[in-house]
Length: 367
Image (cartoon, rainbow, N blue to C red; front, side, top):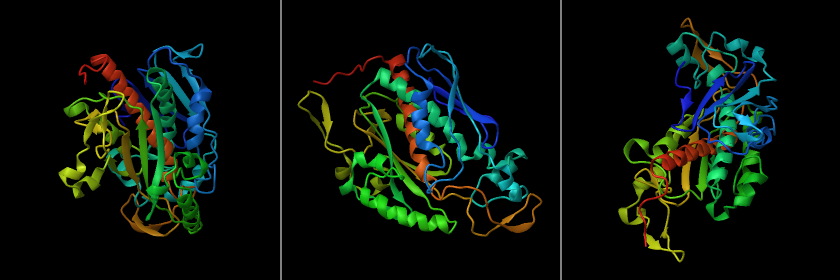
């Protein structure tokens, strides 16, 4: 299986399977001299790890990261950084019933059709467990961004669970860390708790929409045509397990706007820098950042492993039924929030490095 690497200058290769001895990431292209230790990366992994509350899978993994290379005396050396996370709570027997069956909505059938082999123990490489490696790499990217561009802040949150949406009038940045759903709306978090608890007890699952915002991103990141910042962001988010749709800024809703409403008017601020009246573009024009908040939104489908009986077939082509047992997220979108943040961090750092390498400082002066 090829194509396990993403990024241009900041390149991340993830490896390992859900029920293997370990998984991790090899990060090539991290600038030298970035202060880093395992605890700095662990902070971000702790936000993603399973079993923290009743609304996520009860698989108990410490997700303890080990830095095997690329760091000396607390700083990156510029050589590849190897990050490893051991698996400690696999229950492969939970999947013995699906050894010959394909789970509807899961990658089982396509992996088998393409490779003629599949790891039925939790999905192997197709498992959302792979995203732990991305979060580890994202933690490293965050520290590099902090060293290069201290004002950049990356924050993800859930805006919708199933049919239930947040109220933007109640949006509160400080509320995001105060509930198990990463929701910036305290009332929505309370309502969603009852809703998801009912689904969880019935063995059902539901999808979600996640929004990730990068504040403090300078103007000039990205390149026209094939190196667009939004192109790479869309690809990064779409590569996350269970993601079925990605939007930048206004996204699909821009189709309902007139040109007058959609255009973000420009004026000069008191600080002598360009300002915008709105941000329908999501902080990106022509593939290049405007200096506004970069806003990305992605939709996560319902977890395909559910306790409801579903029709399927076996590897030999026989029609049958299946119930997926084991420990699964009733809403995988919850743990997708830190994953989306990690992918944003990796892409932003990658484009910071590309910009520094090709242009250095912005060339076009205004005012």
